[in-house]
Amino acid sequence: MKKKKNFVLTSLVAGLGFWTTNWLAAWSQSQIFWVNGVVLALFVVLMLYFLFRSQLDSFKEILPVIILPSFLTISFSWFTPLLPSSLIWQFIFTVIYLGSFYLILLTENLFVVSSRFKAVPLYRTAFVTGFAFSLLIALLLFNAIFSLEFFPWTNSLLVGVVTFFLFYHLLWSVIITETDKKNLFIYTLIPALLVAQLALVISFWYLSSTLRSLYLVSWLYILGGVFQSQLRERLFVKILKEYIFIGGVALLALLFSAGW
Image 1 (cartoon, rainbow, N blue to C red):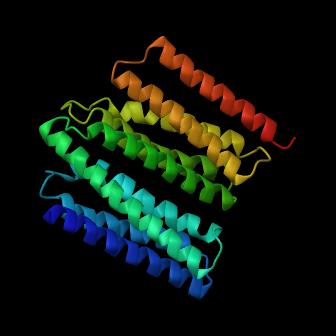
Image 2: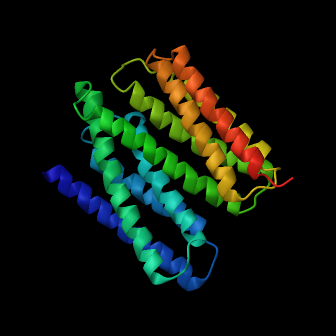
């Protein structure tokens, strides 16, 4: 019960910080929202460190736990300027952020318990929830990145960094009960590089930021599914064909939607 109260309090503080930083950015009519998002994410990391330090022994163990909450904060902060500037929309988006933040804290707590006491009954639910939030975070961040109209190489670099951390969290949650995680970095780097290269290619296409983001998220889902199946030693031919089919459909949809 005390832990849930701490989660609620942490979520409320993060929600208040999110609302305040967005209000300051809107009031000053400046383009510092991306800085606000990073600063608020660092504050979230600090809160989570004190929240989970009694359960985890080192920062290396805490790192996977802070990925989704911090990137959720950045994604919502960077996506907010793309929404209508009315107070109602800002309030609704803040409530969604607060609720999402709390759900992620509950999910991470299940992962922490699983890492200590092997798989818990709700582990599967936590894994699906974490994967779903990873896709949501990627969609919002990719949309914000492409909307800023950076150079293609900059898009590729930013997308690569985001996907690396999201894949790291996803694959970490797959092998969470294993003590030997020496191959986790390689398994994370490969799909992150693939998505970064895709981001570079589609940066040259005449596409909306939403279409680009959806296409990359579809590959985040495909590669995440393939690599987590490989780690579980369940990458059967049937499963691989299903992911190849999804990739083909996503590519066809992109080609038909592109402006030539």
